[in-house]
Length: 208
Image 1 (cartoon, one colour):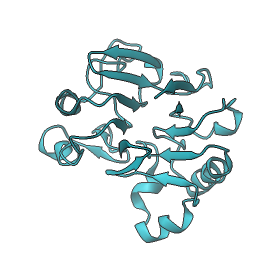
Image 2: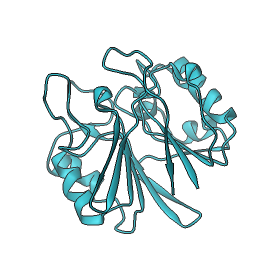
Image 3: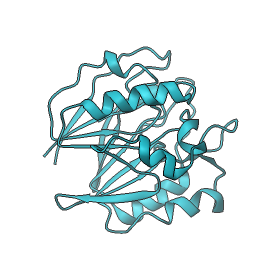
Image 4: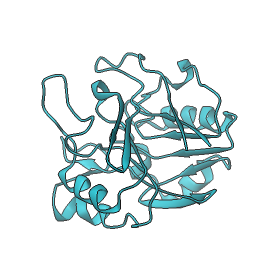
């Protein structure tokens, strides 16, 4: 299966040059300010793309997904799209889990404090997860800002070390775009925009 991964498109999704594949995954921050019109435009675009499977999570800019009633959101998500929020799905034998949560910073969407507050979310991740999608990176892997500060999550690192997914997809740190293979897991930061919010990075392709 050919998996295409994008993240942190921040409203510039229609300018992407999308490669062909079987599964498309967006790892959060579909919008810039989390406004309804931004999200609806993204959902319309995402829903029309020609992939067999399309999966998405929200990110820290996507206030819309945090504030909207779940029943109302269910009516807006296109039938061809799978939206994950601390939830999972199994596709062709691949156990997939997605979470929009990131470490607390200036009260953005889906922000949680380290320790018990954020671990409530990570504890939900099943041990048999093969493909993990989080908006946040783990600490120390594709999480470094231009100033040198690493802002990945220590608690998520512990969970990933425990369950050892084959693939961990995320974004959030635009300047850390790339792929790293470590031990049992391939880590992909698929941020489409750079640190200046310019569309710079290509969708990443992974063969399962």
